[in-house]
Length: 91
Image (cartoon, rainbow, N blue to C red; front, side):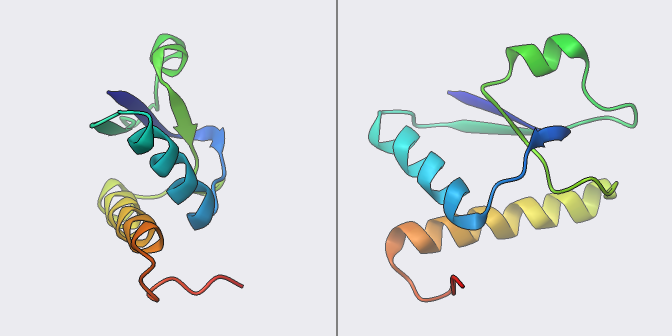
C-alpha cells in the first residue's frame, strides 16, 4: 500500500506525472493507494515523514469538498491516460 498526502509542501504533479507514478506502482505490485487530505492545520511533520508521496494542488487553500472532487477527477484522468482513452488531451 502507498500513502499519499495532499499537502501544500508536496510536489505539483501534472496529470501525466500522476498517471506515470500510479502505473509504476501498479506494475510493481502495489494494489492499494490511500490518499489523505489534511485537517484544518494540515499534516504533522511525522505524518509527512511517514507518507510515500506528498502531492500539492498548488499554493492556494482549497475546501475539502473541492479538493476531494479535484482528486477524484485526477484519478479518473490518470486511469483514462493509462487505458489510452482520449479523455485527456495533453498539450
